[in-house]
Length: 112
Length: 112
Image 1 (cartoon, rainbow over the protein chains, first blue to last red):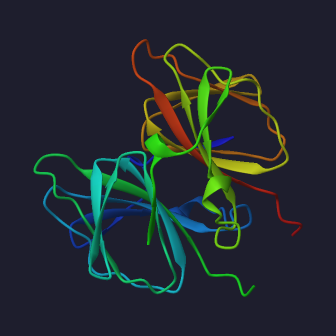
Image 2: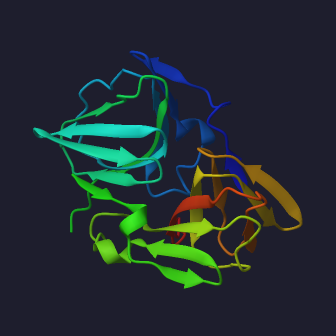
């Protein structure tokens, strides 16, 4: 068994979001998806993101407000959201004091 | 976009663990894995589990103690653990008052 620790993972910053990409763990042959964590500080939001991969996100701390196609979704800790291929999305942390952290898995759509 | 709510998902109980399996969401054609949440009450633990699928687990609430092959691993909220194919495992919640909830994705190993 292997464990993966968000706090000690090698990170990069995208704007003020801390991003820990799972490429560093060398799991390409084991996992049928790529993965990352990202943390959004209180009052901040992700840049608009849009990509061909489907993306399943699980909120592991805080509450996400996800803005997609003119709609807003509130996703609490423990819950999840699935973005379709090419769906533009922004993930907001509207809390004034709590960090938002999301675990995301993403993969290219199958042809079938 | 679709959202998935742990609290309202159709569940089943395995011993005293609440299990919400994602088969109910009909995502077979979209996801390259199967998934579930499970919640372990304070002081309880999962039955021994062993299966051919690899399993990536993300702790979304509480702290997991995972017992595998004579070793123990402590996995805090937000962190993750990856079980290899056929690794027998028990997931314990040693808290006296906090529920442990885990999101797990699992898939058959590839041939390559």
